[in-house]
Length: 71
Image (cartoon, rainbow, N blue to C red; front, side, top):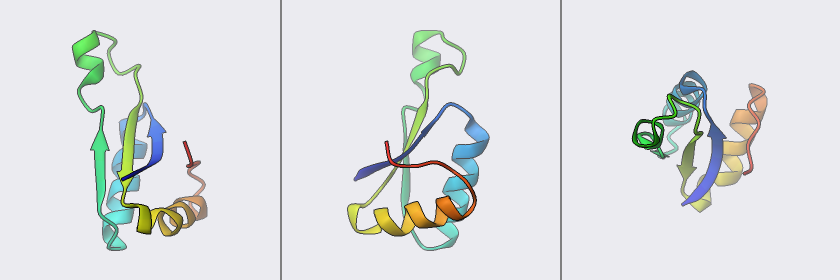
């Protein structure tokens, strides 16, 4: 798994997940509950992971819609 996207806006993560899933790329969201555990109310970023063989394609898809990747 490779880190594709890190963002603290849940709408960006949800949109990217839906878009990539629609393209047949399996995604996995991590750090979903970290803000709740630390009491920071959504300040900590969430990460979106993809398999290494899908990384370049996923980056290209998100770049087409203006989402910055590559963390």
